[in-house]
Image (cartoon, rainbow, N blue to C red; front, side):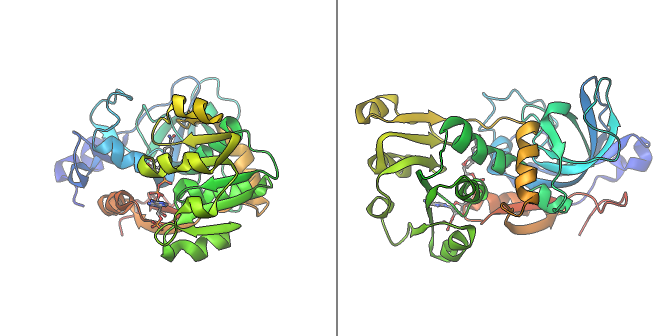
Amino acid sequence: MTRTPAASSKHLGAQTMKTIRIHRYGGPEVLHYEDAPRPQPQAGEVLVRVHAAGVNPIDWKVREGHMKDFWPHKFPLVLGWDLSGVVEELGRGVSRFKIGDEVYGVPDPARNGAYADYIVVREPELALKPNSLHHIRAAAVPLAALTAWQSLFDTAQLRPGQRVLIHAGSGGVGHFAVQLAKWKGAYVFATASTKNQDLLRKLGVDKAIDYRQQRFEEVARNIDIVLDTIGGETQERSWSVLKKGGVLVSLVEAPSEEKAKELGVRAAIIGAQPNGAQLAEIAKIIDSGKLAPVIDRILPLSEVRRAHELSQSGHTHGKIALRVSNGDGTLERK
Ligand SMILES: NC(=O)c1ccc[n+]([C@@H]2O[C@H](COP(=O)([O-])OP(=O)(O)OC[C@H]3O[C@@H](n4cnc5c(N)ncnc54)[C@H](OP(=O)(O)O)[C@@H]3O)[C@@H](O)[C@H]2O)c1
């Protein structure tokens, strides 16, 4: 991706930064590599030098304008709501972090994201990153792992011994959900296509289901919790696998309350929330060796359009991460 020469950081002075921004909704071509003013942390906020940014489907959904009624974004907008980096500056009153701390987090998706050299994040949205992960791998964790955590633990209240069905166990959210459910002591069913069956087993899935060869409801029965990452027909067919008192948690489409009532089950749709305290817990589990991100691929920030196309295909495994900085003050370009 090319930069506009008139917008070089030399021309604009030292307080600029490199970003990927959009000036309107649209396809991958609206993603522009350009300079922008470096943000200043206000009270309760932290300025983070971004080393890596995770890519999530929400990035292209925002880019295409699907979330415009939900988040009133202003243009130009920096995308990317998953980051790992180093604390550069503290706003007034910040007490949990110091300059130089290595942090990761999900910044508020209503504000500018992490496809940039720097981002301002509210203190409660950050945690110290897992010691055992380099920034690139750490950036792949926060949004997807928090979504899995909040779905399984906060909403579904997963208990040891319960039977869980995770749709798209090979995906960004799904691969964390499988590992977290196993960590909690659940018996895990998960779906993916033929090429991802080995991955499901490596993640610890007890019954891997190839959704291209089998109907999941023929294998998964008497389920306590379904995690629906797909919606549509997959959600509709999921009701039949739930036991009485079970729960269907969807990330994508509100399940019918009437249907839930009729079947004696619970149904919920969740919107994952930034949560530094939960990320601190997740970091501990990662450092204990019980949880790890799977990386489909690492791309430089300059290949963000390709990263979006891949994410939009709906068939990547694990996560895509973008290398934002080399860690020595130079921006990664290749
Ligand atoms: N509500 C929230 O707060 C929230 C948070 C995070 C994500 N989400 C949403 O949740 C969805 C999943 O997110 P993600 O990051 O996990 O996506 P993702 O990483 O793009 O998911 C890709 C995976 O889905 C699998 N897959 C595709 N079709 C499938 C099907 N019919 N049955 C089973 N598996 C299938 C693919 O496996 P194969 O290649 O083997 O088919 C692939 O590994 C997205 O729509 C995202 O926007 C919502």
